[in-house]
Image 1 (cartoon, rainbow, N blue to C red):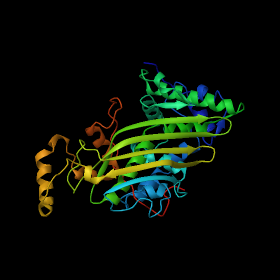
Image 2: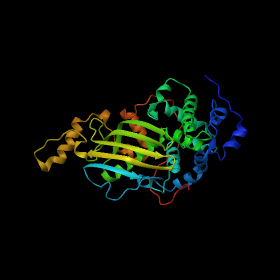
Image 3: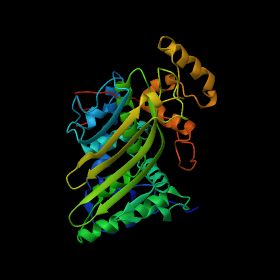
Image 4: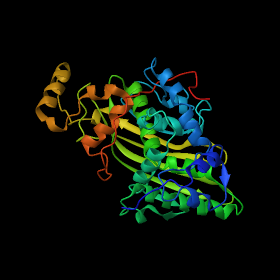
Amino acid sequence: MKKFTKKNNTSNKLLSRHLISANVNYYSKNFKNTKFIPKTNIINYMFSGFNQFMEYNKGHKYALDLDDCFIINNDDIPVGLKQNNINLILKMNPKTPLDKLITYSFYLKQSYIFEKNNSNTSDIKYQIGKDIKRSDITINGKLITQNYRDIENNYNVADLFYQTIINNLYQINRKTVNLNIANKIALLSCQNVFNLITDLITIKLNDILSPETNSVFRPDKYSNITINQNEIFMELGFDSQLIISRNCEPMDPEYPCGKLNFILYIDFKNNFYELKKFNLSYDINKCGPQINTSDSDSQQESETSFFKKNFKPKYIIPAALFTGGIIATPFILAALGGNKSKKSKKVKKSKKISVKTTKKQVIK
């Protein structure tokens, strides 16, 4: 295995404390073959706000919800319907700017990185490399991640990805490269934002379908990055079936009864994001085996007995597992076979942190 060393660590801290742009060779000279990435504005923002976030989170069930991230009108997603087909474009809510969205996706999914009470970027770089090589990412229409599949060292993968981004940014500005944008692209190439958005949608759907519960099932994901003279943007695409409980019975993955697909669009020049496509459809009546009964008075009893007779216990997902909120979802997905990624090394344990609506921003 290739050894990694710190290169001019003291000078790097001074150079990168408030770094936004640098020459095209800055990354390769200072960070290639190390465990670190440049500490630009977004990285400093992430490390500086964690303690304040934790203090706020102690007294709240959720630190964030879908309405905090996107502007949603009361009638956009109706409550209580057993069948619906929703097609929306959801604009960014200014109370949660892009830097905060990125930051919370790490706070809520990998809090252990920041619980160490230091500003070491080693864990972030490791996660970037780990997620990139198991993702489908294109840059200007070219799939690049297929070249990373067989590289064992995640730091090497991150270095190759950074250099590819930097080379493309250099083509539009031959003087300097915006390393803050490079960092944001790398952070958004992790699975964290995908997981955060899908969890927020799951919680929103739980609210509108209460007392039923739901989960995404067998999702397909991709990331498209475009870098040219006119624009620098990224699209995160997500397409999944939904499993939903029926009559408060446990969810059965043999009967997906909904679909969710969205495209999260991020404009780096304007520091803006939106769900440029948000399609959600479901039919609660199809969330289990078909029930045929001619006696309407005994319908509820028939449904219950039919459920107990025909459902396979090993596939039943108890609704109680979902009461943990956004943290529970990834573990259930794995149990259902919903995560198609390769098996990875066991990650460090982190404290469970959930998310809730708030009128106050935790990080400003």
